[in-house]
Length: 271
Image 1 (cartoon, rainbow, N blue to C red):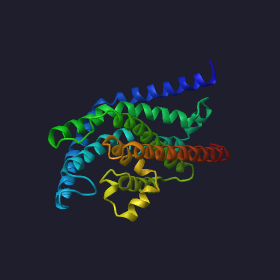
Image 2: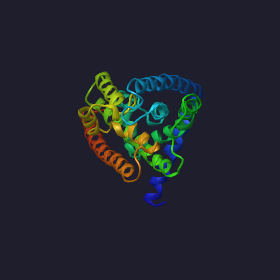
Image 3: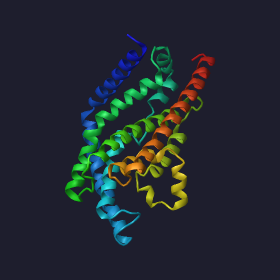
Image 4: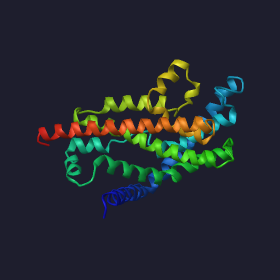
């Protein structure tokens, strides 16, 4: 088998492994979908209330488009994995990372492929219920043409990979830190507010929106929703997707360099 075909086979196997692993937690998935839906209901009506208090429109959103944003943000939480992941950090702290280093598979590629499998599984059971309830309760303002959905599929794939790459870097701090609670808390606060998970970044003051644009966080939630709802169309949508691709490239390179440095430190210490 050629090296390229072998790598494709390895990636496919890890995606399938990630899908099977997360599909075993059906009760947790159902509980997560219920919770997402309830919080989506709360967020949708808070958003509608804020838009109503602002005079009917706020940052280009009216009541229906604002509620649609809230429901889509809830639907994307699980696939994009906004709330974090610490498996790699735990393996570094326990020394199990040495097993990963001994395997003939690139650890970063293997973990990313498994995360894509997780995202593929959670997309429908965690994302569909909030959208279904949103369609019944407040209505959804979604485009009727197929192009936004095709672009959104690419944007969502990049969002999942950017999120994983950010979390990969956060986990790698375990090579140097014994306690990750500070780093994890800082990441969660930044991700929660700058990704557009709470409110659209278009509602931010200009200085804060500019600061958010210099981080990868808008690529996680705000960008896929802008593409799905066709708020960004044509060239604008392609530019947003290009920005996601640039962030992904930079984060992957940074992740490889940091992992290589940390692995050398682990060997020096006899781990």
